[in-house]
Image: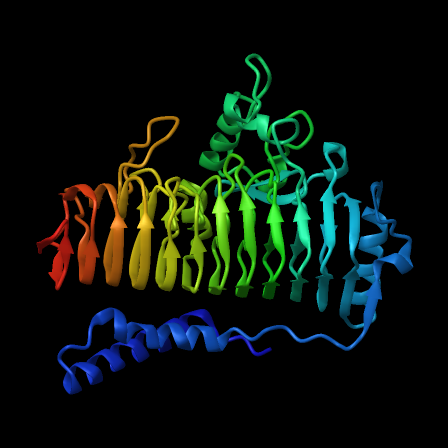
Length: 475
């Protein structure tokens, strides 16, 4: 597959979008920014070609796999993948049945295919995820337990089918490491918040410690990601279901050309984000169901100093035809956002749950910094959210002081054709910074009902309302 250079591709998309906006406005003054911009989204989608594989199959049963839910099939599955890749590629089949395994290592030109009725059960033995490998935790690279499904510097890879990946995480396994009693943590037990874990990793980030020296794994409490393609190109995840995840579920890290299609994520553990593209570009998330314990989709680009050093913005990301249920947010940008995010398109999605906190959310602070620009949201149906339809927060903090010297830049956020039945505490909630207020937020053809406070805005240019009604009042 021919790869288009990032800057050239970005410039092409910008030129295309601007040209269409200009042309459309000449022909029809009622054409809106969001409507015109989605031509650029279609260009991004067209650039992402599904990987193609030779017509060869490798059944894991032929490599010694046993479908009893007890026998460890790590060696059999990975032998099948190696054989497939070494022979030029094809399809590795996991047939109907229960297959226990440790980490699966995906290789170039391999389609790992789960047939209907196949359940891949990941081992609860943490030693199975050693030795440590290069991975990332909340926006900082490190050496840690292997992700459950991992690909590193591979091309033309896929995970497809109608089967289930069951991480078997829970209150008796990975989740207590979070340090939250709701997830099985017991007072006095070690957790990720202890000095030898997160505080140590944060200091390594700040000091630019070489990644090879950031060794954690055994004796530490960092949970692994579920599926993490790292520095991969041309990635497809299609049809499968992910459940009971230790940590983030789909985490394309430094990837280019990624499609997530028809995937179901149902996992309610701590930090169980559904899909987190990080330092990644040209990503299409389509026709998926997200029912999660954290953000449904969270677009990221590194944490603090590390994000600024790596300096790869996440860009050209299209989310469409998805159903967001439980979660901290439907489509979220941040908080690990220090390299910036731009060109995000969300359309034709449904978001509805008493446990869904926000529909569209942007979160950062002055330690993260970063920028967010060119976010287009169109044709979204929101049943119920807890806090707000749109929340922009530049004071985001959880554990510690989050005030620094990197003022975020947020601009060009457009919502159009959005219908909301119950918006919870706020309709629109914006907390910008006086040093650099939020700029160019528009709402067009938006109807919001049930907001206790219709609009709360601090340090933002005036929102532009066009044919927008909140609690029956025209804005």
